[in-house]
View 1 (cartoon, rainbow, N blue to C red):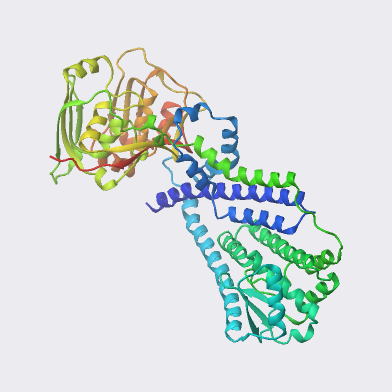
View 2 (cartoon, rainbow, N blue to C red):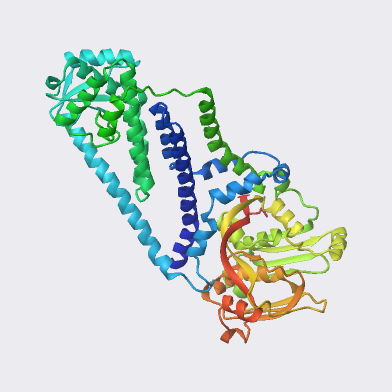
Length: 604
């Protein structure tokens, strides 16, 4: 049980995490390309680009895709207008959907993957320990600064306060920044996000001339103006969650570099002398320690040597011209529009009126009697479902989920709804009208892929069932032809029957869809026919059922007599390969899911 539980979690999480990291890496690569193209322009532009790339790690494209999938466009027009770009986006943005499952899934459905189920909990544990370790480091450093603040003395007047107020006015800061005089050896820095406070080390003012003091305070004011602490806090969250991914730490260094460079450019733009400004930064480095947290903006961050070179160069950074502004706007638009557009064309059928499965069907029962099954006896040998030629339908002690399966021609793995209501059992007696009975004699009751219209009407009218179809990526088995070809013959008779017993399927001229349906029931996972065989075939498949298969059959309440050949038969996957010349391949593919929006117990 634990093996299957961890395997299911892995199949759900691993492709999503892999796709998210891949998508975020693509955005980071695009950011790197843009910053390279804009390397001679103002630093705050490159900083914004890197910040957007960082925030992408917190916003999966699947969220934007979900927004697109909710748009109420007509499904038919969307299907008809799907551009080639849709398929390109799907392949590029989700490369791990199948690969992750291939790596994680067992080679045969009957054999569990012990390495996966043993390693997966350790992977989660290692990630969690790393996450807590990064948070602990941040918290300890934060407490260090917090303790320094508690021991600090507020400054309300003096040389530092007067200079700070002038710099606030020059920088357009309306709310005065509180200033605390600290005995700690930390460099001057901005603490806090909502109400920023400037921590000023005691004794540093004696080492600074008025011009030096003005330059340093102007630098800190621009940190407040730019809200650098808030942006740094977001990236710290990215680093904590994705601590195992070196790219996020590299991006953190780029953010810090461009942040300090942007403040340097603003200070120099205010008229500060380059040499004096460089001297002021070096003096702070000489007498103070650097800020221990990126979200406490200081003066000495980034590569000091590179900063000195840039400051002393008498080179003015170019502003963005109209063409480059349009490029950035287009890039930002595409980053949002592409996943939303992908979601529109990937919209689930359930959100289009034409695929509403609760629409009134063309055929319905004329008389219906439904009673809850009150028996507490073992129902394994009592359940039955019968269709009669006179238009009668009888279901005895069957779960509601089985009626849903018959109505919509889906498997258990394709039903999403309230398990407590779906497991309730009922006795159903119904009969079609004479006109529908006559029409039924000319066409099968269970249309291939469409289900039973009359049972759909029964569920809609008496159980108040409302549902829609959605497409979801789920674990499936692809049924393909093995290397030596199929080991059965096409039928020459018109029987079209399949005898189903415990551990045996005996086909007398049935289509491959009957085989995939029965395999889906016994494997508990949708089996997709990819054999390319379109005829009616005769074969005998026998195997030894495993406990999970027996539990599924018993749960449906549709037992079958045991087969004498099943006692010595191989596992089901092996039997399919050896006896039929077919192979079951585990995949992760889009599957139509019946999502039950509402269902209730029928009234008497």
